[in-house]
Image 1: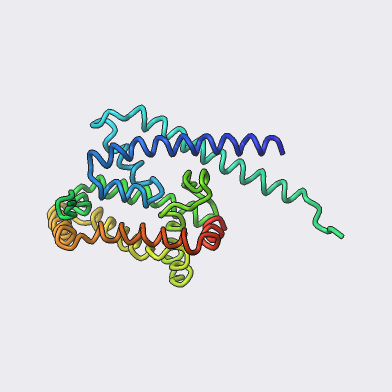
Image 2: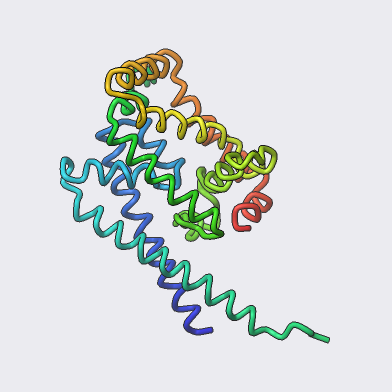
Length: 99
Length: 146
């Protein structure tokens, strides 16, 4: 149970980091590519901004930012999967015939 | 005042085959992972705030629409036909040879400049999301979180 809580907190921190980095790249996207690209970045769950960021990483000198963002996304996905699997396994351990 | 026709066009990006290929390649794992019961891109906005973002449910809706389940697709996200259309345009941009692709991209960019279709769709999508968050909040969150 405690491990599950820790995974939850770590996932939350990774999500927060992802959101902060998304906003940083999004600002660059609004400034460089214009408002249409920026809004597409917002409405596509950050995916467009992520692709755009990598495509322009060298030009805009944001390679380090993109590397950290990518790392955090990978970490977030791993924690999300582990968290989900832990919840499912705990549900399997619960007694089924409650009287 | 802002004039949408002065914004750089998005559809002119289709001239670049590399861009179309990367965009198409990025959407494939999302749909494939979802088809196998997983979530390839968990939304940090939803995780932190508990409120789905404007794009939440769009992968599911697109997947359902590609499967022919129009009703459920539109229940998840009304803009799934736009995404399917976008995927079709991206595919055509990847497959077409150099010259027709350039002409096709220029034609689409011209339509975008004239009608402001992309910005209109984006504004409509934001309004649609606001409507769902304000008027159907609990139903919307339940639907997205499964």
